Length: 184
Image (cartoon, rainbow, N blue to C red; front, side):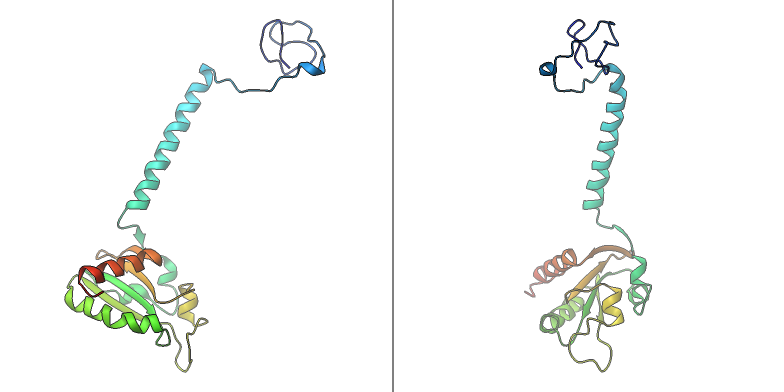
């Protein structure tokens, strides 16, 4: 409650804890509570700003960092051991595809030409279908391992073996490389 005598807020509604005066119990004199930052709060606020600044810097670094992290464990823990398939010292474009996928079939020759023209890029193809299955095999161990919802699905791994992109960003990277080589 607001004390009219000392003009301060008192948590008690009977007597002001600051000046000791009795407070009026007029229900129409209610005021909204507001938080006042005093010099005691300054240190905490500075710490919060430093913490938030560090989070912003880390987020920007994570967002714009070319080499994000090592290959996630699920990419090496299953029927497909991606790390064993990668070509050391080259940027690897992993193409998860199915022969029953028209976009996969259309982009395959372009990826081959890209790999032939560029000595710094290797294309690693992984067919997600199990043998004997007709149509795109969404229930295959490979499709489940990589949590595929659409194909072609690309994963880009840097020459140092770090995951650069996967999914949409990897697809954009592949298109950029194809454009630079004049293949599309």
